Length: 503
Image (cartoon, rainbow, N blue to C red; front, side, top):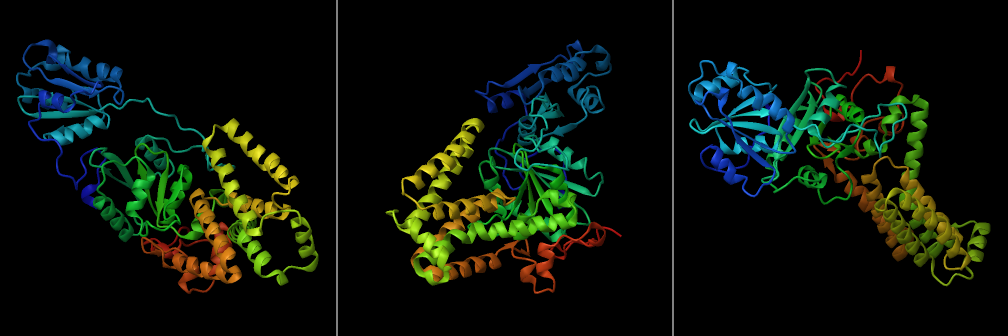
């Protein structure tokens, strides 16, 4: 792992060089042929007519004004060229600080220089030496740090990740101001050369987890890394499972909290989200606000979220199973009310609930995909007008709408959207099983789901921990948040070298 500690861009170590040939300005121009943003300008160093390096950059990802001010202007000043007679003298002079740049790298391979140019560097090429110097002069044209849009913050920070990797790493550094925060950069994608940063706190994160993540990243061989799914499906233990196995967050403070707990984080250049591992199902039921709330309030909200999880998964299937196969379980007054409500409805209970869940899903997708004002309008129309009209037209019964609505609202309370998607899929499968075989079908599917969850692992940590660890107090650890002065130790499941978080 130590061999890969670097802060400079470069080719992926598992890749063979894609571009071969001498490192000259002409070769580079041939590589970037038909690239309208590629710029190359020969410069007379010191205007003395002795050395003629070529300055190259990609317009847009490099600031043209800073290239002119910090690179081209110093190169053409005669005072800096005193004693320079050869390209080697010029190269050594630039390495010693003849131009204004905080970062410089000497390149002898064409692939390395191309990677530098595509990641925001400006190159000075010496054709006679077949060498180049790359100076980091990135453009500042990027989205500014703003408030989180998905993970609302009441008492926490009002910052969210952006699409620029270096800005995101700086946001994490501001919260963990220690050299123990290690940052290992790598490039993924044969053609995209997307930079990926692995972050962990040395002495807190388990070394085995860091090594295993690095091994899986090295093994990843794709053309481009442009979405979180491309990375996630290659590094998780069970990519075919619908349940999420990485925590996604847009908040740097939450990301830093996970690192301090002993987890390992991933940041990808171009994606405004951080990923954290290893994870358990219990982690998807927590929110950052719990750390800022009184422990009694946080515990009550945690219990409420678990109740919402059960309602979202079980309620529609349970209603259908009882209404179709086990009417004797329904109290008499409630049964009479259900019979009266369904007297004029021409469809069966199964058809009612299935159609309402599908309609609810359509409304949810419409609200997500449409612009905000239109999406809100569609949701209101669907929830009020269409639902009320369906009841008045005797198409569906009121009890079916109540069951589906309560299940849908309960699903919205889940902190993780990825977990919510898995819950909706599980709810649909349970509903089909209840239609087919009542409570027996529900029980069979629930057993299969629980067996699948118990079989999942995330980098050596069981997905259903702490319930599956066989230790006393696992349920209490899952549901109850201890007061901060009493919570002195990190999660033992993470196998952290430093087990104590406070004295």
